[in-house]
Length: 431
Image (cartoon, rainbow, N blue to C red; front, side, top):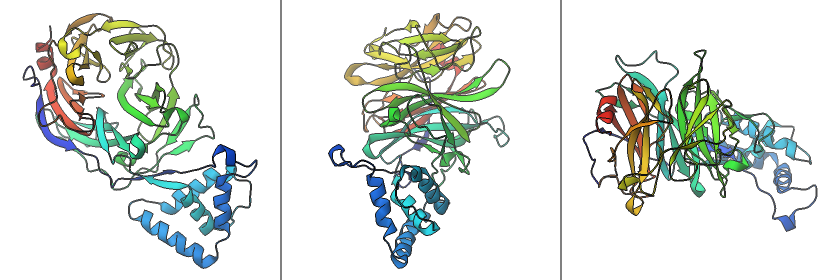
């Protein structure tokens, strides 16, 4: 299906998955239930075996693993020591008192995870915290992307770049290293506030956020980043994402000030059980506002005094045109423009085609729909229809710079592409 109107300018820039990018993440096993012995774990058994190694064998094993990891990771010794510190409280037997042995134990409880081996898609874009190196007339941006690796597990990765409206979009080369966050605090149970310390990353592209909670076991999906401005003018980066346990999909909130530290928190309330929730970039009428798709079919609006608790709400945009007859939802947080709240949407039609459109909500009362696109502004093209999930174009958040708009989008659940337009061009095809 071709674009219904010449609304978008497409760019040649494509971001594809790179299996050579790996992050070192925790690895731990236990015995099947009927083989578990009270007080003796499989982790302890592995440590006991390492403790039997003589010095020459110990040195040889450690040299092999550190040489391998040094090829694409920084600060490997510190990483292995930190991993040993993580698992030491879980052990009941004799522990090493020498650095070589504890680093080797740390290596046995670590694994390299190729976090974007299968796919790199569903991006969202926000203004970067530091605009000092922005091009003249343009801006610096941060891009979040969903990477899929072994076991179809989804993680969040980041890129930075420059964009000059009317000119090029440039995404900076990703670092060769990927750095896991340090998990703050002792608790990684569902419902807890989980702190992620990313100060070891020298560049935002090094940070990888992979599942750390049982609720996220199968993935952290489709982060919708927004640069949120509070009533006192302070700014925080929030991002709603879907935590998928393998059985249940529930929304959670990622929050941070400058991409060096984040908090993960669960959302609560009867409205917090749906995928694809997207936060407005400021309060409206003194309250937080959120878009969702609670009935799996229409776009809903919710208001709350608590950013973590969401109740009630109601439908504001429902399927009307053939390309959205199956369902529709948001493609990221609303963008505030002079005319109201501009929301990019997705619609699902025949043969499960995912297309993108847009709608305009009233600025003072976002429950009022002012206009919408009767035809898609972006649809799968012959060149962009094939991939892991064919016939899908999908975005998790566009970026405005003045009246210009940059729309990063995922294609076929496989790779990411870019388009640009203006507010005027999008509004012109609404009715």
